[in-house]
Amino acid sequence: MAEGTTKLQAAASRRRSAADSVRFKELLSSIGSPIAVLVLWEIGARTGLLDARILPPPTVVAVTIWDMIKRDELLENTGITTLRFLVGMIVGTIPGTLLGLTMGLFRWVRVTLKPLVAIFYPIPRIALFPLVLILVGLNETSNIIMIAIGPFFTMLITAMAAVISVEPIYLDVAKNFGVKKRQLYFTVTLPAVLPALMAGGLVSLGLALLGTVAVEFLVSTSGLGYVIWNSWQVLSLSRSMAGLVVAAILGAACYLLMDWLERWITPWQSPAAKR
Amino acid sequence: MDGREREPPESHLQSVAGIKIRGLMKSFDVRPQPVHALDRIDLFVTEGEFLCIVGPSGCGKTTLLRILAGLETPSEGTVDFSINHSGRPLQSMVFQEQGVFPWLTALDNAAFGLTARGVDKSARVERARAMLHKLGLNGFEHSYPRQLSGGMRQRVNLARAFANDPAILLMDEPLGSLDEQTKMLVQDDLLKLWEETRKTVIFITHSLDEAVVLGDRVAVMSHRPGRIKALFPVNLARPRNALELRNNPEFIEVRRRVWEALREEVLWSREE
Image (tube, rainbow over all chains, first blue to last red):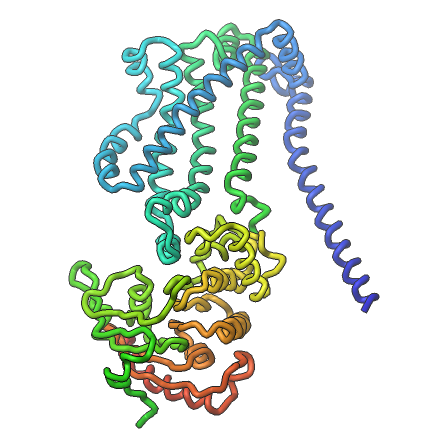
């Protein structure tokens, strides 16, 4: 008996260490691939295989980033971009979610507003920019509106569809166990739509970043988008590349933050809870 | 007689506690023409009885249960619950497997009815935990349904209804999605729980074996619009063991007679 138990434990720990080594190899691969790209790029640029004037090697870009930080050009612009992005995200997602939930819950609201959504949603958002500029003026408000439009519609449509497609069995269970109609929203509808809202949030994040950089390309005299565009126009490609790298890092950080938020808000959906 | 049991006369029913279903009809107003789901259902379920209902697919058995559960209203007819349920809910339903809330842990799922009724936290946690324990789910209290197997999820579903401690349990094919062996194990757990509490149960199933193993009586419903076609008493001694009944001669005999009644209904459904 005791011997059997020991054998079992040994087998279990062997299995565990095998799983650990697989996980380690996976980690190595996922860190390795970006590093490999950087190394190839460096070699390519140094050996002249790639034109270093067009695609400066990573080490040069890194030095440029450092220079720009020292000359106070980068951090301030990164801060401005981050702020625009965050404000646009909040201004877009929160009203979008609330309106979408309302449209999902109340049929007459849905019937009334759906035609408007159908007209405005498919318009290429960037094509609205001149109109927004005329209506609001060339200022920070018009920038924020442009950034917010994408997340607004994404959350509106996601939330509405999620409410409509809540499994009827959940509502039956709640009714049968005596949940009052008004409590139903919080005990069933909200948790049932949360996973879809989190997915919509992730899409909104990408759209808001895109919107921020686009606005900064077009009209702004500050922010990472401005740095990238302006440096490119004066053919200072390593500076342009530096802006791009910082924007990519900013995007990745937002993505990780969202991932963490999702684990925290919908723990039953997290990979650890999947079989 | 061929084993069919006639309903006791009206005067007798006045004194016996139970669920009295009289002339129940239900049609759904859908296009192109209304669907008649139930046709004059008359049925008396005695308090403390375990009644199983079998019938061909689409015969309206789930509709009947949903009317009893208060999730649908009958088009005609009445349902009287002359069951004393002071201090406890009248009825709770055990839904199919996907009725477990994915966002609640096993414990919170089991305590769901108690939470909705405003039972205070320590009492409801204690009752839900005890019920999970009885169903062999100790150690899984804080797991989400996604982390559990089908059989375990269905046990959570049972725990939710039993922890709510209603006078009547309405079960809608709760074990339908389980594999044959897991099903037998959960049936056995269900029998043990029921024999402790002797609640009034109406249990809908597709499986004849399940109906005979669990029920005091088995009702056979006709094809749509559903009527009660026949009722068969199951005189198997309790406590029963779900794993060892299948070769019992009485079990085989009742099962044969139930199938006899059901077969033509199933064939009729196929021809339609």
